[in-house]
Amino acid sequence: MYNVMEEVVHLIYYMAEGGCLAKFCGSFMETRMGSRKGTALAVVLSYMIMRECRGLFSVADYENLSYESLRIIFGTIVSFLTLLIFLVGFYKAESRMGIFVILTFLAVRDIGYLLMYTVWQSSYSLLCDFGVWFLEKGRLTGDDLMDLVLAGGYGMIFLTYFSSLCILWAVLKKIVHSFQEKEYRMHRRELFFLLTPEMTGLLICILLRSIMFAMEQERPVLLYDKYPALILIVPLILLLSLLSIPHGVKVFQGLIDLNREKNGRIILENQINGMQGQIEEMEHIYEGIRCMKHDMQNTISIIMQLTAGIPEAAAGGDKCRHDGRMQSLQDYLAELGRSFDTLELRYRTGNAVVDTLLNMKYHEICRTMPELKLEADGLLFPDMMCIQSYDMGVILGNALDNAIEACRRLHEKDKEAALFIRLSSFRKGKMFFLEIENSFDGNMIQNTQSEFPKTSKADAGAHGLGFTNMKNAAGKYFGAVDWSVSGSVFTLAVMMQDEQRKEYEL
Image (cartoon, rainbow, N blue to C red; front, side, top):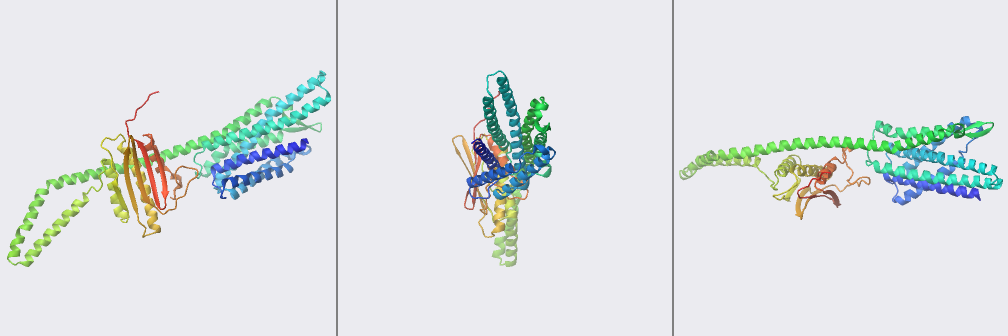
């Protein structure tokens, strides 16, 4: 009966471990199967079979303890390779991320189990010592002591399994929460940095399991019986090793955020430099307008002189002279029109920075993609607006860059496709809404690990910087950024609170 109960407990334990593995893998990678529940069930069953098979072939041989460390190392390697095969079969795993997921799971599982085994084994030994003491005092019989030892042994197994599962679930959940960039393509050095705590923990577990028992007088003796001080030292080492794993992930995520913030600042600096160039261009336009106004009197005089002789030439029948003056007048007026075209301000939204940005993008589109229509008739800004022009420029600059890039990809695939970018805005109460619509090729890759769509650019390391900058700019005004897709139209919506912000000091 006890053997059946022990086998049932083992299967339940393996099932719970498999559930933690499926949840952990699903948090980092997309499934190859249509259903996440189906994938999780397949992972749990496969893991149970693997653990059961390994349990059959991994019984400790106390008569040949010199080979025990090799058996443990070999078993760990087999477990890693088997789980890696599961990962490739059930999930779309990037190799380095897959290695991180498997080694992290194995390290947390083994460290947590060995930590709890040490704690409850010490408690069990103490219980046995009390049982022997009560037997010597005559308060227990030999049968009572055997029942106590047997019940305590099964209780130790149950408590070890339950507590180690709690640790496994809690630590893996902490890692998932800390590692936010789950689609980050890490380099080899980054992978080595990230796996250092996991590999250290696994090696510590292999070492402890190899020396846990020693043979004395042809019987196995527990390490803690020979060196009682290790009862305190070993759990502390295991605990520190376990805590270093989620802490290392948190540090790694902090480095990613720092690098992303650095790249974001570079982009913002480039945008600021571009806006400064646009402002200089606007100043040049305004200066040209002032000069044109100053020279208007001379221009009018020239036109009057050119037109003065036209009636006489026509009346005198001098056709050549008439045609020459008319041609000179037409050429002069055409040149004058071209001069005015260079000074044209096509968009007037009520915001000088936005006007500059839109006109700059318009001239860029005219040069590189004249088929693209940039419509901003519905983009208007109220006179008294609390949203800073700089933040509005960051949002619109990134949104327009993304929209132009999407239209360019569509044009490369379909030369006859309608290309457009529509900008509009409205105010409702204290909230200001900005909407940007653009055509695209309809190929939107949904990123299940992030709130933003997956980039299609070759430089995937800079993925999300534009969206992140827009989100940060909108966040200054208690706003948010959202996006949606309808057919071949991508819509970006930005909401911001347009009121005076109050600063509170703590």
